[in-house]
Length: 441
Image (cartoon, rainbow, N blue to C red):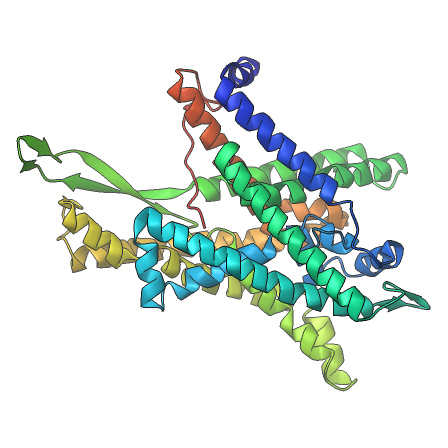
């Protein structure tokens, strides 16, 4: 393995790309320590310590901890992701956007431009909301914003919007001159930044005698097994064989080869968990608007993140959204039509409508175990916290959104590094020399 790592730095282009990507990470982390002007960071930190497992905690996860510190990168890359998801969903209902999605490189450039405009608009609106939110936070006699007003709102909007646009630009620079998917890697860095702190907390607990060495080894072993299971989920696919007929164009003969269509067990990726989490925060939000009494107490207790009722509804929503997003991400009719146009067919299945029905049936069957396992991975950190009394900083890496993103991004990046190595006749980082990539959002 050390020889393979040395081979990475023997290739000048790959070495430059990796060093450039690392320099972008440093810039991103430095920006994460520059606070928005006019706030009291100490009061804000105490506020977020009490709300680590709420919607604020989820947003802070994607922002790499910048939201809880109210830095210039407080909005993170979430406005860009929101704009991308909105355009992707609109593509399934708006014919003009759908045509652009099918128009190749020119269509992709147009959609990217619209995504950037949408990012700026969403960032400006969210920044105003963050300004109003920060102005209303008060713990005892201490206020997060000592001098609120129009000037603070305007400064916050400009600062946070510029911060998000700058992060978006950093991600695009990684895509162009670095290695890996830029936006995904920025989220990746924000998540793994918490990993050393989690292990430091566990080490202090072991030093204080709260937890034994055997218990710590058990927790680490479960963490390794969970990560391996998530890798298997991310890589798992069903290969559908495809045979192309021979055809003569001019003096050349095309086709005749055999290939396959990989149908992923988890085509939807991490999106079902994000959608489900957003909806599961609604009951406690509603509880803040209803009068105090038995119903409000029941909502607060039944839909706490560690209650079994919450986990049941959360799991069912994940299964539902897995099917919903899979239907958006993979269209069997389009795949069947493309196969028919290019002279391809699945052995034993008629081209056209029958091929689309065959692919839809296979995808429906393999998505069910994938969605159930995804739901289990989502609630596993909470179960580990209840069963082992492990701290939140550690249990968040046992599954959920964070682990799925970390595993998926790591596999994507390793795949690109492997491609560079194999092109120059070096062995890849894995034994097979090949890695299956994820479907990009």
